[in-house]
Amino acid sequence: MKWICLFLCCLSTVLIGQEVKLTVCPEHTADIVLFSTSDNEKIAQCLEKIGVQFEQWEANQPLNKDPTHDEILNAYQNDVERIKDKGGFAQVDVVSIRSDNPKKEVFRQKFLKEHLHTTDEVRFFVEGFGIFYNHKDKKVLRVRCEKGDLISIPANYTHWFDMTDDPYFTAIRFFTDEEGWVAHFTDDDIADKFISIGGQ
Image (cartoon, rainbow, N blue to C red):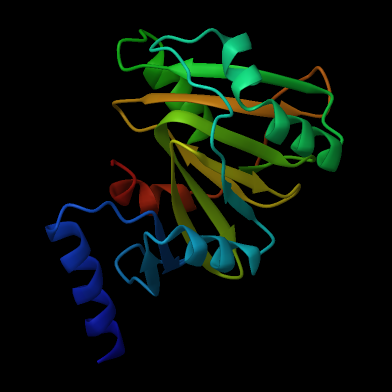
């Protein structure tokens, strides 16, 4: 009965057109949903239990339709500096991916296998969306990060990222050194079990 109720809850959310932002499944299958929600406060509480930070930011000044990277960083300067100080990040940049990028599938595949980093992975989504999968405590937590969302995944946490086959996002990235994004892949095929729910 519990699983039926959870399934109907998820189904009704999809039917009314609201995208589910957090879905929790057992690590062996994407067919069983243990928990799902689109409430940002509940998402933050759920992720906090596994050590993942999730919060929302608002720009301190309006952004033009096509802002420069400097304009984006200035618009979120207070929060950017707070995260830099808290995490000891030495480098911050802005990355944008669109569906017309000829290398979009190459970029997608680069992040799509389970991996970890020796430093925290922190991303803030200025626009668009991307999907992070956190593999922890024999569960997979799928988080659809959208405009205004920040996610911080601790060092040595196994995860993967899907920008989907129709990518659209601009994100602020934080790094502790000049090497930037360095991944250590687990060679586990777990991500293949969940890609079917990673489209949109």
